[in-house]
Image 1: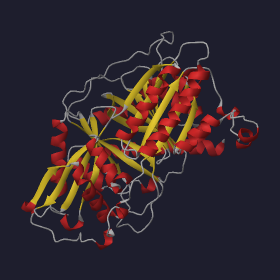
Image 2 (image 1 turned 180 degrees about the vertical axis):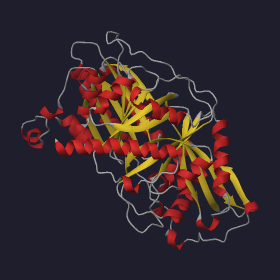
Image 3 (image 1 turned 60 degrees about the horizontal axis):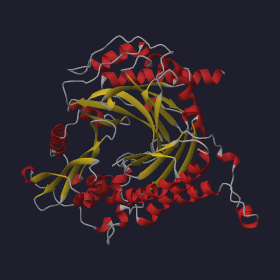
Image 4 (image 1 turned 135 degrees about the vertical axis):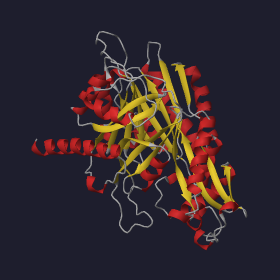
Length: 494
């Protein structure tokens, strides 16, 4: 349930935006207190913009409201007079004794939000990002009796006594129970330990899935698809089968049901993120027709997976596996020179592939604007930059954006480049010079368009613990390893 507002920079409209912000936050699941805090933070930012950014000129402000399972983010963008918050620090002493409230606006915003970030993007304007996390009861605190004391270890029933039904918000508590009892706290999708977050995601149709119950009504398994908000595809994940009910084919039945449900909803494809600490999930994906397309080095909280003796590194990787649900790929692609052979091999796995065209790079004199979207994951300590349009100003715009996020000290920075634009080829070369390396193909990931992902990793990666199952995944690993090692070697000799 994302929202977008485009307003003229007039003080008279401020109250309406503040009211909308409060109501949207409440509808998305924030309690009234936190919703009021976000509305106040937005009011403070907009007041400063409307008073000072457009003093004697007409201007416009864009506001984006975004929802995830764990938080909401409000992004305010404007192209007004330049501003450096570092030159306007707040001083409580000056406010009390000198009636000087310089910098008070940003101080209030920081107090009202869980994360606040100001980005100066130069000629591309200024950006304010406000984040508020959902206050949620952990599954261990959700019930009167501790989970350890509840009777979950029921005897398994015959196969014919299982019933698969679509998930509803009423299933949220049972889903959280299944996850906790099956994985303790080793499951990587943290939001599944919070019943109210599951409930909201289902009610707002950000995910759909199936739950398996016994004839007595007890939960035995759960499997869901998380719908992309940027394309007609979904992520297969959030899977669990209770230990007493395993090895009865329930996962297979649920996966088949999910594929059927995805087609019914008009999705063009499904993808899965298969961990490389083992090959089990990669094997499962391959069995159902998924094909490996990328390997993403990711940051993850340190955790000990149930059944494993040692704690895993906080630097992990996943293989992106993709299953097309359509015979027609809507847009032709242009293969970038450096990775043309590897991308051709990736595409050759699929029965139906997009048309490959020869793209001649457009002249720099053509006034094509660069359009960059920024997504920040504070939990994973990573940033994703989506290049909507590779304009003639790509290098300058990208350089400004990368510079503006340096203070975040993110471990991973990913950039997705459209494969239907001719300038992507030179963009890849420019990024390689700035220590970006291969990740791979992201099919239909943004606006039903194929994208090419590159990644920059500021951490030590142990490639010996990365296990791959398919031939393509192995080739991706070797290419990424070689490029990563080349950058490390270059750095050590600099």
